[in-house]
Amino acid sequence: MKILGISCYYHDAAAALLVDGRVVAAAQEERFTRKKHDASFPRNAVRYCLAEAGVPEGGGPDAVVFYEKPILTFHRLLETYLAVAPRGLRSFMTAVPAWVSDKLWVEPNLRAELEACGVAAPDDVYFTEHHESHAASAFFPSPFDDAAVLTLDGVGEWACATIGVGEGHRTRVVKQLDFPHSVGLLYSAFTAFAGFRVNSGEYKLMGLAPYGEPVYADLIFDKLIDLKDDGSFRLDMSYFGFLDGLVMTNDRFAALFGGPARAPEARITRREMDLARSVQAVTEEIVLRMARTARALTGKRRLCMAGGVALNCVANGKLLRSGIFDDIWIQPAAGDAGGALGAALSVWHNALGRPRVVDNVHDQMAGAYLGPSFSDDQIRAWLDAQGCVYTELSEPDWAPTIAGLVADEQVVGLLNGRMEFGPRALGARSIIGDARSPKMQSVMNLKIKQRESFRPFAPSCLEERAGDYFELDRPSPYMLLVAPVQPARRRGETQAASDDLTAWVNQPRSDIPAVTHVDYSARVQTVGPTHNPRYYRLLQAMEAQTGLGLVINTSFNVRGEPIVCTPEDAYRCFMRTEMDSLVLERFLLRKEDQPGWDDAERWRERFAPD
Image 1: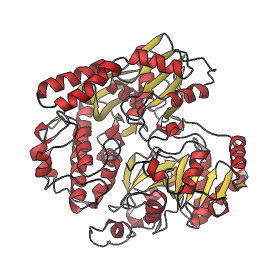
Image 2 (image 1 turned 135 degrees about the horizontal axis):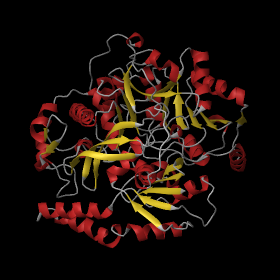
Image 3 (image 1 turned 180 degrees about the vertical axis):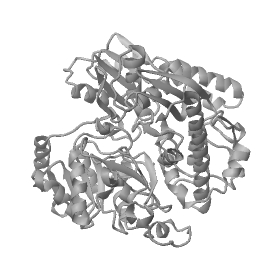
Image 4 (image 1 turned 30 degrees about the horizontal axis):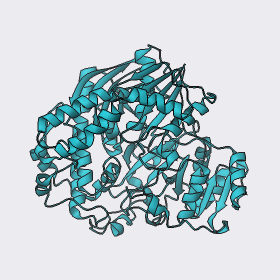
């Protein structure tokens, strides 16, 4: 049986396909359209998923599942507008006509969209609740036969967070926190106030937090949030604008924190650093309290997590080290894109009652490598048609050659195997560099990624060596845990905190300075031999040549661009930047050998800063 899960119409549209309960394919629409966070119906992702499963042209799935229930969301919107009337009229007039004319009619729209992209619409169309989709995406692909389940995000229908339990092939909700009292919306409010884009820049706020001090945390607890021991809370909505307006915060919020919000692209000041650190500390406290409650209510020793807040890998690392649970598994596509997968899984297990097979060790996500791949013949034909100059590497030479380039401080773009599902590049669509280089963080931020200098980079390391580099005692294959760098690898005290972020970030803090953040932490990806054996061999070759089995790993894109999908995407990104070399499967391209390129600057017009 083929079940197609779909999420769309809000942000990060995606499709995922199960075949007899097995995850066969999943991808975000943005990777195909090149429009970051694309919310439109995922036509390209749907076509890809069905093609990956061998469904012929004109065929279709046996069932389609939408990741939430629009009628419940519409109910919440109407109740909210009535509660704040007559304020919010502008927001009401903007939102409601779109709902009445389009968003309420999801089932006929789904059928029409499927037919428009050459897919036969099935008889069965299901709808799951938003947080049911998140919970299913967290528990059902996990290694665990039973676990507590924690979902946290902005809002879905009414729920903003749930505590649940997963047992065998069932999930159920035990406790729920409803709109507008949302840790995701609280974090997004500070994201917007700091000058970053909501539903896009939250990870920037997390990366900025270590530069600041939590000087506003008490003020947040005193004025904005009434937090209970069980992790439930209420926001003082008089400081926020998302109930009755089209903004996250209002003038009262600005007055509380010393003036208006930072303008996008303006200089980051001490205030933004301290605000980031403060709301991060508050978020971590909320997560820890909710986790303790989940343990108490369910009695489970293990935890599964999903929802956008579950991408806060700093909070995840602290939760793991707290010892509240023995083990934690986090859905790698924890945001709304992963809702497509969760919706399909919920129907297969919860609705249809199909069993799971688990071993409490291995998950069912195939390393999150669930997107398209490209054959050597396809890539060779494309390169030849473009007149590109390349070297074809033999398999034995592949890893040592690339490791040599990285060890020589080259920046290398890497397209290798199936594209990752979720926001993290995991060695399939990555830009890699030498973690030992003290200059590499600035080089990659400013010359390659074209992004803010303060942003940290993550390491990919050999799974069996992780404990040599980081205070981490288990695998972290999806780059969803932050861990401290081992004290023995750290250098002495660095210079005092500075408002000059570029100078501050360039201070070496360990013998792997390019992946050591200002607080001596790193967002770790561990790599084993099973799901991406080439990438694993590359790290082995790095260890053989440098003594360290790790590299910098950042997503293969420039600022504002989705992660690359195709060899053509990768080549364009390579030529737009100061990357030194490009690897497309077995083909190595060096920048100086390539024909002229006249698109070096026009990408800035296509990709708005995020």
